[in-house]
Length: 510
Image 1 (cartoon, helix red, strand yellow):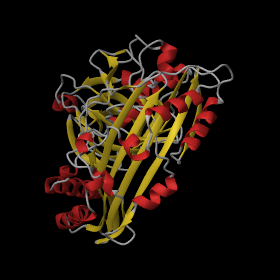
Image 2 (cartoon, helix red, strand yellow):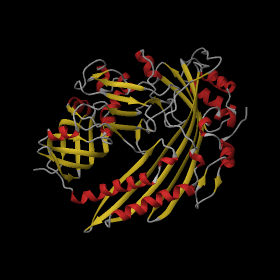
Image 3 (cartoon, helix red, strand yellow):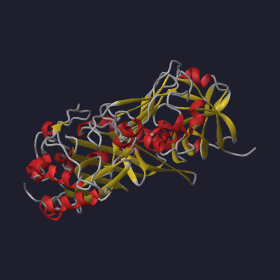
Image 4 (tube, one colour):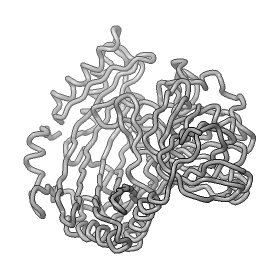
């Protein structure tokens, strides 16, 4: 077993090159076939073998405990951004460390270290063990590898992509945005990629490894007309191969972000009050995620915080409403081959034909409810212990057409995109800013609107969904992040066009 300190590792693995201040982090020994890159990485590069893992788990359970696990992480992240026609920032970072958890009942002891040495790892395990105070608990004598599907295979490692290959992308976004409208006065373009390797080893004998990509190409712009300025932003990405970022994607990005900014010059505030709201397909699924999805995470229900705590097997929506959370759609930002507790990625039906059928479980909540984990135990990094978190959360398509949904509304708001939301998890009360939207008048989409909020209650909103269209669309971006308990996780979401018969719209008072 090789002992590798974080300081030694960083000093020997960062090569400075490319643009000024850019750290291209590609340890030469790691340039290997991407298809086989995940298996055995921590053992071959850092000596984290089964013998050491068994010692650490024994130490974590040395004072009793129901369960223990070890989470190794190595993450390489790179950014390059352009502003005012020039590449102004290019930099990278490495995160390396291990976290060790001991579970006793529903309590968690946790220790972590940046030093991959036996001494530091056993010290972290001893810290985790203090959650219990009893006789030592046994651990598995050997580990069995968890077999998973790969929902984001890489033909080429993201760490093998040079800065020179990324620069044309941000430059092209800049040039394309300016070419589309004379109203554009400022463009920021950013390319970000991240490659995370993890290994989870558990006291019940499971061992799982994964190589997880994440990337996006984004643009934010400022437009000006008659002394008035409007702003907009957009991005494309997910868990993509680098080859995904083609000239077609650049064109789509520029077209979308310019359209979003320019249309705001025509927008006005609508009247305030209660009215019908049509949620457009795709990114509006963030409302489903925030106002409803969090309430279905099992820890909130186990603690009696969520409105849904007593609603399993009960009606929460109309029979045509079906809601899914899953980690298996190829390339989606919330997809995971394995969660951070070693449970394979899977599909969980939350609401089926209007009935609440499941919560989103980690190992602790699954044991509490007497069910199997759903693969939702996720953590931000080795410095955090896992908790129930969403993955890709969306409502399934219905039978209506989008045109039928819109035609059914005499007066209301059509919401294309929302942002800057606030949600009370327990009650489900929410308020979101509508960044892109239009009026619906006499069954037709008319003038654009701006500077409005939509407000309501998540569970009540779900009950008020009266039509669901057949045009389910998932978020195509790579910047979707969800915060909970001080941890931020990449997620995705989606929605078909659907009608909420009544919602509070904050606009202009009559």
